[in-house]
Amino acid sequence: MGYKIAVVGATGNVGREMLNILDERQFPVDELAVLASRRSLGTEVSFGDKTLKTQDLDTFDFSGWDIALFAVGSDATKKYAPVAAKAGCLVIDNSSLYRYDPEIPLIVPEVNADAIEGCKNKMIIANPNCSTAQMVVALKPLHDRATIKRVVVSTYQSVSGAGKEAIDELWDQTKSIYNPTDNKPPKKFTKQIAFNVIPHIDVFMDDGSTKEEWKMVAETKKIVDKDIKVTATCVRVPVFVGHAESVNIEFEDHLDEDEARDILRESPGIMVIDKREDGGYVTPVECVGDYATFISRIRQDSTIDNGLNLWCVSDNLRKGAALNAVQIAEVYVNRILSKR
Image 1 (cartoon, rainbow, N blue to C red):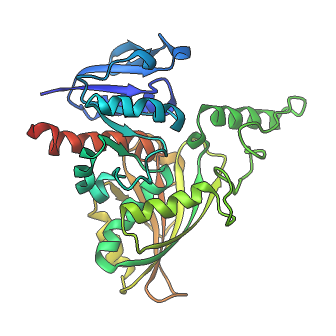
Image 2: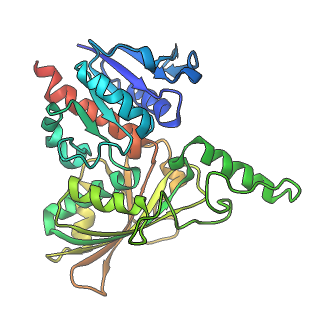
Image 3: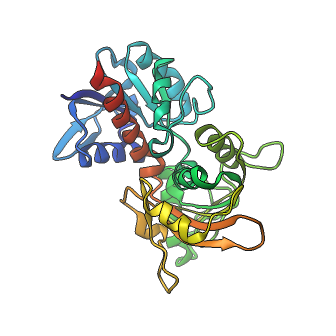
C-alpha cells in the first residue's frame, strides 16, 4: 500500500534532500506533489529517475493527501501548515514554529517514537533543530543506563544550516581570500566566515545566550527528559555540510567509558568510530550523505564524578533535517496509517 505525500519547499536544500531520502529509503509513495512558492513555480526537481515540476503551494488542496513534509520557514509554515492539517493531512514541520507547543510532539524516532500518538491533537509533528537531533540520539541510550544530570555542549555547525545564501557566502569569501581585489564582505553572517569561526547562531537573548543555544536546552528537555540540565555554546564554522559537537556529560551513576562505547554501538542510528590513533575519529567531511550519527573520542572526564566526554558528528541536512522528517513519516505510517 502506498501513500500520497507532499513536499513543501521542494526547491530548497532540505526539500531536495527529503526527495532524495524518500527515494533512497523506498518510502511507499503512490503519489508525490512537490510544492513551492510562486516565484519558484515550475522549477524542476528530481525524485529518483523522475523529474517533477513544482506546483503552487498557495492554491494546493491538501484534501486526500496523507503526509506533508514542510521545509519552509516559520512564516510560510504558520500560514499553510494549519490548512494542510485541517484537511486531514499530517504535517511534519522542519521549522521552529511548533517545537515548543506542548500539544505538538517533537520527535526524534530513535529517542521518543512513542510520542507519535500525540499527533492526533493537531495533526502536526515538529522536527527538532539540527544540532539537537544528533545530540539526543547519543544521549538517550546513555541516559537510560546511568541518568544524565547535566550536559555541556559546544557545537561546530556548518554553513548549510543557514541555507543556500550561507553556502554561497562561504564559497565566494573563500575564493576572494586569494584575490584581494575581489572583496566579499559578510551579508548572511555577522562576520567573515571563510577561514574563521563565529560564536553566534540566531538572535541574542536577554541572558546573553543565542536562540540556537536556547533551542538545544529546551528541545533536549522536551525530547529526552525535562530534568536534564543543558548549557550550550553554538559556533558557526567554515564547513559546507556536517555539524560536529563536543559533548561533556555528567551522570547520576557511574558509567565506564568502555560500557558507554558498547551501549552506543548497539543503539539505533549511531555508528561508533573510536580508535585512539591518528584519524581514528569521524569529521564532518566524512559524514556527508550518511544516515548515521557518528560518535568518537569517548573518554572519562576525571574532573567530575561520573563524567564522560564524546565527539558527535552528523550530516545536518540529513539527520538534522530531512532524514529525521522522513523517519517520522515512517513511524506514522507503521504505527497509525497502516492500522486504519
